[in-house]
Length: 239
Image: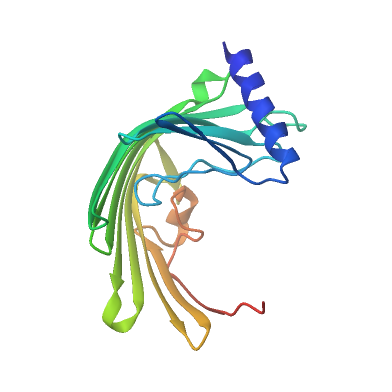
């Protein structure tokens, strides 16, 4: 069965590669089918996304008019040297109402054929209320559990988007530091402010965690840095 899945995804990869990486979309009765070499769906208001880690990757997504959807994505086909086949299979339900309210819930399974000890599950839910978005995810991976909350607000009067993320990470085995102390649980968070101005996209971000100093040896959260970090970006398209 695993070989069959790998073969199906391989067909998807090469078919989409022939289309220069573009997503191929077809309507099949009440279903909408998409094939692509990049993920065609993000979940829980963007909080959960199939990963991209390999040179050879691809997948498919099938959506019913009622809101049910399922799909499978392979971020790594295991073709390149020292790479491992990974299959991300997901299923969920997404329902919008009048573009003012909507909700979503589902499950994604990260599997590694032949290496089942590395498999993990992630449960997610999302909510849209007017121009605001909220998301939540809970994942169970070997050696740890992670819980994440997302809130994204569109402040129309000042033309600014505010996005906040908070997560809790619990490790099965404590990580030692300073020889006599250890960390088994920690939190991290991030704040992002973005606003267009005179054709320039302004972005200010901040991230931090409950760990500092020598404790950072245990950090394995969402942020790129363990301790407080601030970054400002200004981007403008030339074309």
